[in-house]
Length: 92
Length: 155
Image (cartoon, rainbow over all chains, first blue to last red; front, side):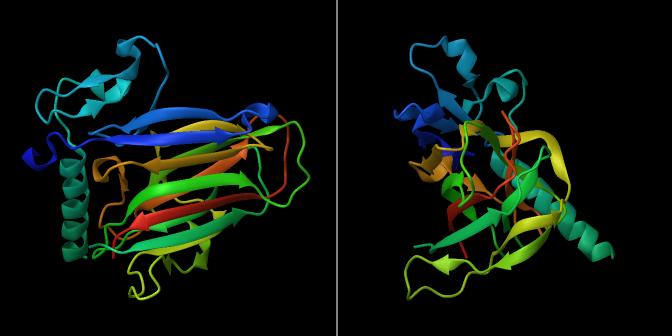
């Protein structure tokens, strides 16, 4: 987890000709450090609506993960999935 | 440096249920990371309607038409990860696990890219697990094609 501290999680989303209006709509985004949900950042929104920050892995979190008082870093989740599958394959 | 690959897929007929138009599948030796995708209506009759584009993780394989990842660098080796399009049967998607969920007008185009490594969407190195690029009708009953293009980094 320490390897991901201070790593930026930013992305960008563009919806061209949004709602057939002839205008493009653009958003900064960030990827939740725990579940990898892509969160759109609406300008001037309440920061609480964006989610939160994990005090353990120092990552930006989506609103769902911000309400969970535990660090479930995506790397840990991926390793859990991979180990579970490796065990299942070994037992077959 | 990891190699980048491109995959494209089309859902031939958008329905009222989520169907997988494009799928990136990991394996025990491959953990691909999606860092770009775009979606738009295919060569259908475009009307004042919209679809919902959803990226979600699946834990069992969809029944797909195979897609061969194309290396962005022609000198790169063939991808270890696999892909598919136009699912005829859906695998198991974890409820509430959408990574991106956005309604898009048929005459619009949605584009997303990751600006850094930590923003990429990672597929676990587990067989049959992957990220599905799905689509369904939102406003209206569009029943034409929907296209996705995605880039990923990895083996």
